[in-house]
Amino acid sequence: MKHSIVNRSLAVSLLMSTAMFASAQDTHFLSSNHCIYRISADKNVLLLPVQEKAEVCNVKVVDGNSNQIKAFNIRLASNHIDYYVPLYLDKLSSKQNLSLDIHVNGSYRTDGELAGFTCWKNMKYADSFDTTNREKYRPVYHHTPAYGWMNDPNGMFYKDGVWHLYFQYNPYGSQWENMTWGHSTSTDLMHWTYQGTAVEADAWGTVFSGSAVVDKNNTSGFGKDAIVGMYTSAGENQTQSLVYSTDDGKTFTKYAGNPVITSNVPDFRDPHIFWNPEINKWNMIMAAGQHMEIYTSDNLKDWKYESSFGEGYGNHGGVWECPDLMKLKVRGTNEEKWMLICNINPGGPFGGSATQYFTGTFDGKKFTCETAPEVTKWMDYGKDHYATVTFDNAPDGRHVAIAWMSNWQYANQVPTMQYRSANSIPRDLDLYEYAGQTYCGVTPSPEVTAARPKKSTKTLTEACEVVVSLKGTSTITLSNELGEKVVMTYDERARTFSMDRTKSGQKDFSDDFAAITTAPLHGKITHLRLFVDRGSIEALDADGRMAMTNLVFPTKPYNKITLTGRAKHQVFNLK
Ligand code: FRU
Image 1 (cartoon, rainbow, N blue to C red):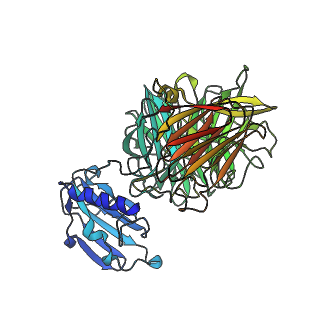
Image 2: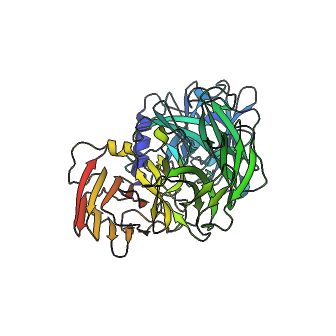
Image 3: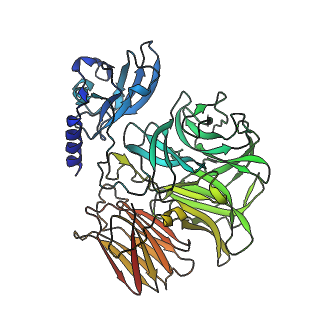
């Protein structure tokens, strides 16, 4: 599979009439670890060959004034090419007399002399970079970057009919590196347009996770309705930096006073800001090792530490990351409660990454959890639901969440190459009560339901929603002619729902992938909504009381659905 993709991509690029190979004279080897590469053509793009198993090269882009204008890390192909990534020369601050200073860390070398690498004779210049999809697992209605690696959703906001999704992005390879905010937009939460990179690394560090708000009253002085983002600068230490945009999130300017918050705590990151009308101030919650810190601000620039939450509460099997904090309605009551989201890695119920949450009260300064410290509540009982956060300024006071559909246990190894990782479908959050506890309700957003065609069928397709009406214990099996299958079991008596992906298809890329995930149920499920999109299955109770998200990599698409028990199904094809 891997080779056919490689050959196809090479063939495609060779056919590209605009592409031209760089010349061997462009390289100047100064040692077995160090090369200066002169950029000799006046083209928009330099295509760099990547081999995922090669070692990381550190690249500095140097302009004609001998200034470093960019730096990134890339696994330049040493003996075989997996794919190409673009260095957009036309987007650099200067295009004249450019050179690349390329270095491989000597003490870890296993790849032989740099001069022997296959990359040099395969570097190419082109007018544009071809992002036509080459991946059979690329989802149809879930967001993926056009190319490159993605993890957490960042800085999500809604404004003037457009949903903005930024994300942890590596534009120079499909594995975690070079953290940058990528950007995509959508008007219906189901079809996304990749907009390129929005916030790039600087001298304070690479750009880790964070959030963004619409500053309606210009509290920051950056302008009315400016988009203000806050993220973690991952440098020598993790510090928090601000960016702002006066063109609706298209381009960002770094704030001159960065970093705005510093600390000597090692895992100090992922600030989530929101306007709190109850105190007429901005609030911010961020992760600090094994707890969350809460801050207040009048202007988004000056932040006051107020309190910490988390010691002794919930699951502490890993690092606390990517928090969110919001007030939600409790279904069927006039009550509202606060919910604190805490993503944790590792420590998830089936290993690796997962999303836990706490319910309680919040006075603008301090979050008080209403449940006993030993109680852990999970938002999703699959293995591939992480870094869940919500959009700022969503219409009608909604709280719309999106997760990263992967798990740090194997995210870098899943069998795709042109891109790696997708996001979950958008889900509206609320609260409900069951057996004396308050839980988070997770329901597919109305935009997802609106995407259904008028007519349903019975035939399973690669990209669809399957609605299963259940009357008691049943199993639902998705399978293909190779015998690969996913078995879902609704056990009404045991009050569980489970998904078995141990025979789902490709799984040998990680020992942690094959799994059976099981969710406890809070009441009966009468309608189950299954979102199948080539490489993922999200199973959600239509009433929002159970969610389970799992990746699958069938060698051929599942084309058969088999039900046992008193269950019926309908298939809505999604495009
Ligand atoms: C979570 C995380 C964040 C961090 C980012 C780096 O997946 O580890 O805590 O900001 O990824 O990419």
